[in-house]
Every structure is written in C-alpha cells, then in structure tokens.
Length: 350
Image 1 (cartoon, rainbow, N blue to C red):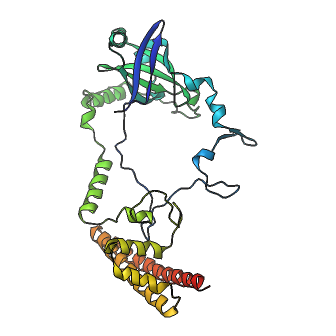
Image 2: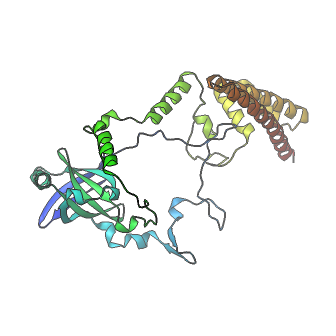
Image 3: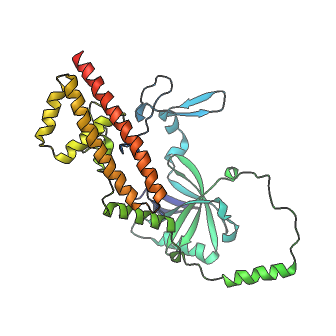
C-alpha cells in the first residue's frame, strides 16, 4: 500500500507525524465503451471548441464560468496559493462523537504513525477513545483545503473528510402533518425488535456485482470475447503511437477487419502480402474481388460472434432480434467495405 500524503497531526504543542492511506476501494467492475459493429474502442478527446484541435494536457488551464464572463487561472497562479504547501492536519476542536452528523461524512483514510516511537500517536488514539470524543480538523489534500474528523478505528486513527456546511442543499419539502397513535408506535417498535441485531458488515454482499462477474466469466469461458489489442485498431498496442492513423482517431471498418484477420493468421502470412500488392494496382476487378472476400470474412466473423451471443440469450425473441440486427449490420458492413476500397483505389490512381 502506497501513502498518498505525509505530514503531522498538530494540536497545541503536540505534533504527531503520520502518513495517509486510502481506506476504501471500489469493488465495481469498470467498463469502457466500444463500437457495437466492430468492437473498436471509443475514445474521448480533449478538443478545443475555438480552433477545433486536440489539446495536450500541458496546454490546458483551469477556468471559472460565472455565466457572462470566464476567468482563466494558470498553473503558476494556483501554485502561489498558500494552501498548496500545507502539510499539517490541524485539530481545531474536540466534540462528542454523537454531534457529528453522518450526512456530512465523506472519504475515509487510515493514518500510519511515522518514526521510531509511536507514543504520541497511541496517546491521541487512547484519549479520543476514553473521552468518547471526535477531533474536528482542517487539512490540505490535492491542493484543496478540507474539513475532516479524526476517529478511532480499531488500533488506528482514521481521518474522514467532512462536507462544508454550504455543501448541503436547502430543501423545500417535508412530511405533511399527521397524527401517530400509541398503538401504531407500539406495533412499529415490535417490528423493529424482530429485525434487531448486532451489525456485521460481512453478512452483506453486492448481489448485482457478483452476478455481473459471473456473467463476464461465463462469456470468457465460452469464448465469447474479442482480442483486446484488436479493439484499439492497431496491432498489439493500446497506446497512442506514431501510427499513420493517429491515436484515438476513427478508422474504417474495413481497416479494423483487415488488421484483425492478419493478426489471427499470424505475422508470416504470405496471402496477406499478395492481397496488399494487388490493391496497389488500382484495377476495378481486383478491388471488387478483394472487397467481396473481405466482406465475406466480415460476415463470417460477425455471424460467429452473434451466434454465440444468441445461444446465451434465454428468450427466443432476443435471438430473433439479434438475427435481424445482425443482418442489417452485415449488409451495412459490406457496403462500407466496398466504398472504402473504391475510394482508396481512386486516391492511388490519382
């Protein structure tokens, strides 16, 4: 585990050197977007709306829009703010535990004691535990000044961010006035008693994520997947390289299919070299022959993928829908293939 921040807890004249670690992680599966026709990755580009060019991070500044005017702030101006260099967790108050409203609580972090002796760290933890108090603190993390609390978590001190009071929204709704009888309260308390118990977080699981993982693993086991490198539209690389297409640019369906076929056949395919040589001649008959062969390959590839998807679908309606959509996409793919080849031969002959 790597520390994301290091500094000191300070209260009065006491300094407690610590390191900060993220206390939580997401268990959700992360997804990206692909084109439903050829499974190519969909990228998001940082495009300037004035000049239309794609902009590198080093040329991007932050700006605030107040409606009529926009104020641009450079990195140099932001670095001059005093909060940038603050490496202290300043205790400003100790309050009873029950006074901290849970709705204000945010991200959790673990604090590790630093140095040969952890006496000051243990002393602060024991004091919070014995007095049943929570320390209200201010600190700076990732250039932002934050409000937080220091709490006891087993043998450790835990830092938890607090939302600022202005972050809570004002609401204009609430329950209407009503009368609750004593009998209703008694019955409600009885129901609560039936569900009462000690809280054990281990007994709860995210059923949706578990089923989602099972679905992904089942598709992998059945071979219903595509080569990851092929989704980037280039051979064996997910990074933006010096390829003629340019990283993140839209490529033709024919190009993606041809590269996928070449990758499956292997780098030593002689038939692929022969087709590439024939394509440079600019002959209409050879172009139409190549496009029909590639279109047939696209149909076979598409039908095998869609057949695998139809087998896994439990309803007959979904299977028939997959066949209909597959047919329309196949016809579209072959049409685009032909036009792509013709336009390519026109440029070469010109």
